[in-house]
Amino acid sequence: MLKYILNDQNFVSYVCPYLWFISAFLVIVLEFVVNIKAPYGRYNINNSGIPARLAWFTQELPCVIIPCYLLYYHWSSLSITKFIIVGFFLIHYFQRVFIYPMLIRGGKHSSYLTTILAFIYCCFNSYVIVEEILAYHIYPNNYLFSLRFISGMIIFFIGFILNLQADSILRNLRKDNNQRDYKIPRGGLFEYVSGANFLAESIEWTGYAICAWTLPAFAFSVFTWANIAFGRAIHHHQFYLEKFKDEYPKNRKAIIPFIL
Image (cartoon, rainbow, N blue to C red; front, side, top):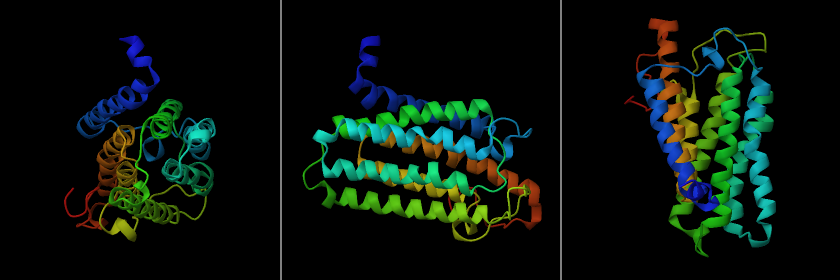
């Protein structure tokens, strides 16, 4: 059994994705049902741990380093299709590692445990997604012109742009790093949901799962929806309702416009 699990293809193609599915279920139970909040950002009450910029940079860095190494390792057998699909993954994480942390204003610390767990998750997740694409998945020669690839790419970049917009709206609620109070975000998807940034990123990885069409990419999309959409976003919605009460827009939902 252990030999089967440790086999690279089995681990990449099946073991890790199913672990993400199980983790997604556990996250929903812990965050949505038990109401446990991950201790970073506004839920790190003591503001202890690692500064926000350093935490984001550190925990997301494997998602750039590992794919770049795997591209180098598989370079001799690399197709343009696989290069482009992995490139989409790197576009997101280049922004997340080298740009997003530098733009954070007044962010609270992230707990040591949260940062360490996120770092470990990013190591495994980036490896299995990219290794599956480069080493094991076979794409048809005309895949870049298929409806699946094109629709997935469009959804991915719509989510990516909406995510950048949502991050910008949140960032501009604060003038500088010393300002830590919270305001009601307005504009973009925030007119419809409290977790606009979480909805946008979930849309983004749904598009990527369609585009890549692999089990690891699909498992990551499911985990993203469970973790930040149906967990973090609902907590944020409750936070805004408790803090702003009647001032908060009555028709704004948590994560799904007009529904939830």
